[in-house]
Length: 414
Image (cartoon, rainbow, N blue to C red; front, top):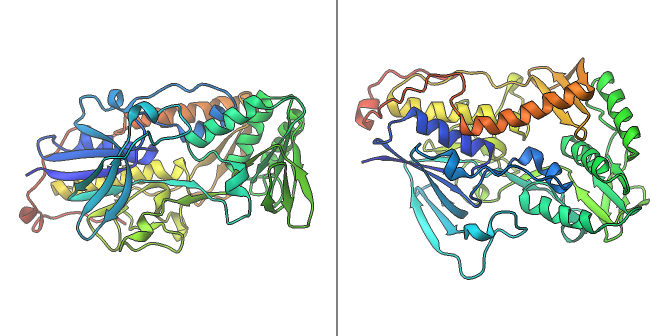
């Protein structure tokens, strides 16, 4: 019988893991299914560009995975039973899932149950309203394509002089504010940050950030914790208000709630606890990668939710699964950071170099060169989805029968 591998989610991590497994294992030995609600790859790191009115290149999965043996199932995941080793999904109409603010077509969805031998959980994360009143009703988000398209439509209807407030001073907030300001200089753009602007960056990085914000005419509200959102304003903790005809909420991400409903060991925020090979510490047939997983890097510091974390996690999980199925040596690659890449519109950028555990150092690249660097990083991330065996041999290995594996000498990961 073929070993059934089901990968849930085809963002950066899920798509990379599926492709890497397909190139590691013989097609005759495994049945590899990739479950995703959309038929093409969504470059999540470009959602601010989509919202600002730019058109992104379509990347259909059926072209990306043609001839690999990866079976794409268009469906939303509604439940996971890790004890019965099954996944419940609802089929999605592909006609209504691309370039639409809604991913569910009309009619009753078709429900199906998938069985697996190995599960790769890569359902990622969505926006986090932090429990702030009015966010769900009045704010826009950039955690996925539907939200970015809704914001795109709203911005297109706005007239000169109207106000946009971006709430959140992290990477997503910085990129959203500068992208919108560059694309729509006729709008009044503001950013509300809980602390100081770019307070985690190096002095050089902070100076450049303020310079770009000043050039683009973006108003910065520092130490402004937003406690409420209304249709025409946001309220801050000190009782002040900031006019806002369109509010963009970028205060962090929340993981998909499905894992919390299972018997998997999860954190209080619902992230699946994994070991160094991205394997669940409670269920050895389950691997979790990307935002859905709590993995640690240097100094046992949890990896942040990001593409920079998710890509090496996907490599680690795929190689560990292949090793365990074929009797090979488990991966022992360290998970660490090198830099933070921030686009500040199409003409400006900031590359902040960091320590292995993601703390800023003095060195930083700025300006046009940094913008080109960031664009290459984004293109490279998308290229890596279609070429998931970067830098490694592509020879497929045969799956060893499970009784034989019990006696096999298998390496261990640190």
